[in-house]
Image (cartoon, rainbow over all chains, first blue to last red):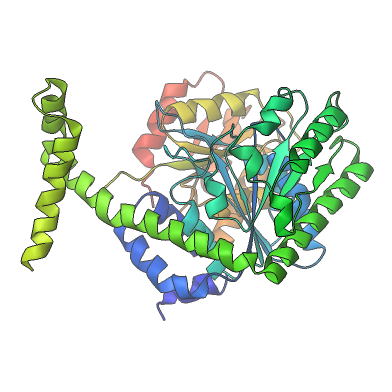
Length: 324
Length: 133
C-alpha cells in the first residue's frame, strides 16, 4: 500500500488534512489517492447537521462531540462555511464553538469553504468524508453551510440528517413547504427558551401528522433544546438529541433503509465523479484554448445558441472515442 | 491547473478578549481571497497548534494585546515544530514593544505587525512570503 494511504488509514491528521486540501484545490494526484483509499471507506456513521445561519449548528455539533466522546467514539467533523462570490475568500468560523476539543486526539475538525457549490456543502465534501472514513473515524459529523429551503445536498452524504430550526422564522406554511422540511430524520427546535418555540413544535407536529414518512416506521422526533448558557438543561437536551440520532441509526440498520441510503449515496458519487471526469476536463481545455470565450462571443451576438455549442463540443469528444 | 488557495488561521492566545483587531484582520484576509479560520479568544498555544494542523493552513497569525506574547508566541512555533509542522509560517501582531522583536524573531516568528501597520502591507507580506504547500 502507498505509504501516504497507509499513514492516513493509521490516523495521520497532517496527511489527511493535506489530502483534503489537494481535493479542494483539484490537484490531479488527489484523485488517484482517493481511488486507493476508497476500499477503506464506508464503515463510518455519517450525521448531517443543517439549518439556517445562526440556528446553532456549530454549538450543537460541539455538544454532540462531547456526548459521543463519552462513549469513546472517534469523531471527524467537516464544517462548511460560505466562500465569497467576489473575492473567493472565506471566513471559516464554525470551529470557534468546537475549540475545547482541539487537543483531543479522538476528534478531527476540518473546515471547508463552499467554493461556489450551491447545495449547502462544497464539492470536496464527499471525498473529504472518504478521507475521514479511511482514518477510521467511528462517526463523521457534517455541518452544512447555513441554508434556506432548498440546499439539501447533505442527503446524498449523510445517513442521518438533523434539521435545526429556531422559533420566529415564519408561519405554519413554512413547515409545509418542500425541500428542507422533508429531509429531516430528526428535528431540533433550538433556542427553545425563546418565544414561539412551542408554536413551532406544534406546527412541526401537525406537519408530521400529515407526512407519509411515518409509514416507513420512522417518525422524525422533535427535540427541544433550550438556552446553551444554561449548562445543566442544555446538556440534558443535547444528550436526548444524541439518543434520537442513535435510535435513527439503529432503525436504518434494522429496517434495511441503511442499504437504501448507501445506494443513494453511491448514485450521487457516480454523478459527481462523472462530472469531475467528463465535464471538468472539457471545460478546462475550452478555457485554456480560449474557445470558451469565443463561443460566448458567438452566443452573445446570436450567431449561435448554447445548445448548438454544447452539441458541437459533445460530438467532438464522442467521435474521438468511436475511432479508438 | 487552478491556483492553490492560501489558508490561514487568525488566533488569539492567552487571556485577552480584545479581538477587534483579529476580526478586522480576518475580514481583510477574506477580502484578499484567503480562506481564514478564526478560532476566537482565550486559546492555548496547544489549541492553536492543533487547529493549524487539522486545518492544513499555510500561516498562523497570532494577535496578543495583553503583554504575554513573549511566552505565548514562541510556544506556538515550538509546538508546530514538535508536531512536524515547522513549514507553517507564524506571524504575530498586537501591542508588542520593539525591545521584544528580536526575542520573537529568534524564536521563529517570521513577521511582527504593530499598531499603524496598514492592512495592505500585511496582505502584501503574506502574498510575497507564503508559498502554498
